[in-house]
Image (cartoon, rainbow, N blue to C red; front, side, top):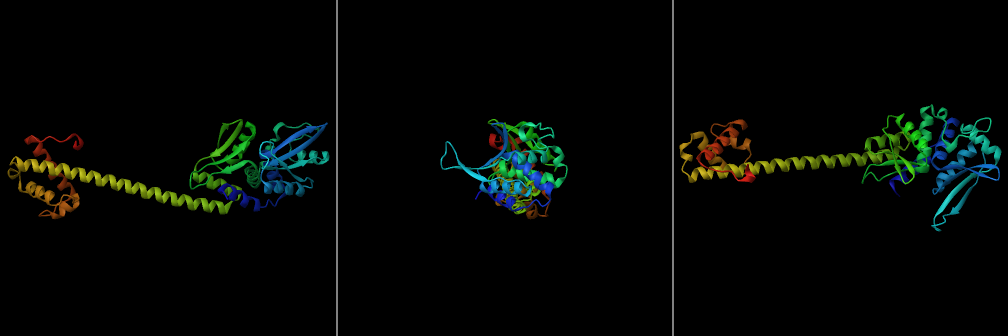
Length: 318
């Protein structure tokens, strides 16, 4: 089962107890997978989904509102082995009651196009949560967090996408909209934002699973950063040590090393005897011991002395 399916299964187990929240969730499901059809002078509200449990959830919300509708199965025209689950509200009095309840229809029978939910239904945070749960169940998806962070809700109209984005932003979620293949996609890309969205909708178990993945990812990234940093430091130390040894060999070959101060001669000897020693370790080997700045100063003086004698650094050591 995909992570997206796990989230939806958990959301299907959540209940909207208050009537206004059930209505908001119903509105969300219609926003994601509903449409209105006219046939022979009659108006029908049709809900279509490939998810049987979502269809049953929608049917249950209708029944809770005192509206009767049956779930039927329809084969796809192009993919015969694929089923769609259809819930069609046909009784005209029930259609009118539903549209009036969702404030999609005015008392005089005028209908707002596109099944866009009236903002008055979404004033409470609990109703906003229910609405987002409903729209995600029908047209939402979330990627496997082990691979990437991506949360999206597909809308068939710009105004619907804007309304979904508004509801997400009410919970301080920075949702964005992009057009894709004649659809408007409301999406989140930040892992922390997706965690918050799951919390808003009530998918708390999925939230914890995603958080665990995020923690493991962050730990791995932190370890990789540290290893890369340490590797870079080691490479830098090795490169510096090689450069210093070549300068010292040059001074020895030119007979100039014995002309330098006792401290510089001692540092040259220690560097040649302990080629892999870090700066701090070289300092403890000096007599008397010196700090890192003192060691760096002496090594720099050795390189300067070699350059003054005619030593030239290789390009990869500059």
